[in-house]
Image (cartoon, rainbow, N blue to C red; front, side, top):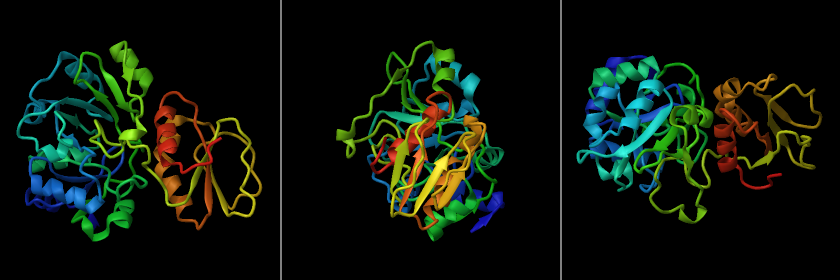
Length: 323
């Protein structure tokens, strides 16, 4: 189930199977994006609704013409700076891309991952790969091969073990379908970096009334990235207190002294470094979610850099009780 046999993974993909693929962001559930039957297996394995589109992974920017019918200059400018890396661009799709990949919408999300094993898999398979996070739909994203197997079991044919994901949160998604770039999902490329590169970026406003309609990008539903244990949020400066009468866990960061009363505490980083926090974020949520707790309290991050993406994941994973 888990291994490093690239040839085996290539054969599975070429025959329409599913492979757990390591990337720098999170592990993806990969299939040939141009094989509609293989893509359908992704939705079935994850229990993913078909109104939630998939991101297509390419080996190199030169492969854009395989899945995109028009590449604006701004896309090439972003690609030259951010690819390979955790940035997804939504561009007008080519006719060969199945509507199932894009939820019937005219744009397809594409990116070039930087993980060396993912790049070898893409190059040697000759496929462009649809690869959403390799976990049951709506749950905590996987950042190790073991996380993939724990969530999907034998629904995935093989999992390539490329070690822990180093970025730890999904890619930033920017739509270039209109005249102005639109940030659809914060992720591994910070909003500040996008503004440096583009000057101005509109930010899509969440619309919780459309959770059952086709989404312009993955990860935009009001509830996503959620642990089974109820998750409650506190502000960056709030006093962390356990819930009376409940087994309470704490997800925190920063130099604060030990906090009494919690049944389990996971401190991501005493220095508050957002890159370090992001790399361990989903693994920490999984640890707390498996600890038999009644509730998890999570401290929000400073709303800058990768903290923007981390706060987005916390808000979508929370089930109430936010302060």
